[in-house]
Length: 281
Image (cartoon, rainbow, N blue to C red; front, side, top):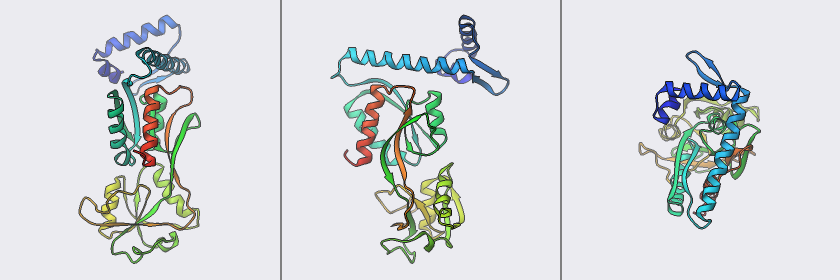
């Protein structure tokens, strides 16, 4: 309730009064009120939220249609992006949208796996750019790419000059784990599916911290996205070596709720994502 009041620039009491009035008019309870824990939507509240989103989406599309099909899109678009993907794709995605649709206001929130789906389900975001991790069955996925992990090694590593290595070649060495929800499970699973247990010595939720630790010879890591440079923030070098094992790739997807038709703004975002991920930008 407090957050809603802040977003609307009104007093919290005004929001509480409006909600109470709406519940009285509809004759149903929309929220379960829990002291010190905020509000939780009831089944009726969830249904009203869903129908309200659909109505607002239809209204926005009608306004865009009236403005003319050839006119650039306008208005806000709420996007959530899986944080490790953001620096690789978002700058080019936003640059293209700004060029082609200058009236489009893209608001981006970065989140980790698990949170991405919550942003979509709560309506805080209409569309997401993410890995296909921890997304529910009620979320649509448009697959943009499938990416296999590679071994990130210090430049001085004995295998840094190889054209490919097996996980068994690394399993006994210190590993620096990307410690993000669901991501960590994926990387550990890559080994356990082969009866291997990695020797995890360090953990970090920061992609660049992991790379910097690797460059300083603290161990190796498994990563997916490959930077345009092998240098780290601290000036060290990281060598990327392909893994020859048949490892399950991660899918880069544009995600949205099945129950809500994507707006033209969201479709424009998805199309730009596809072009950037494919390198056609």
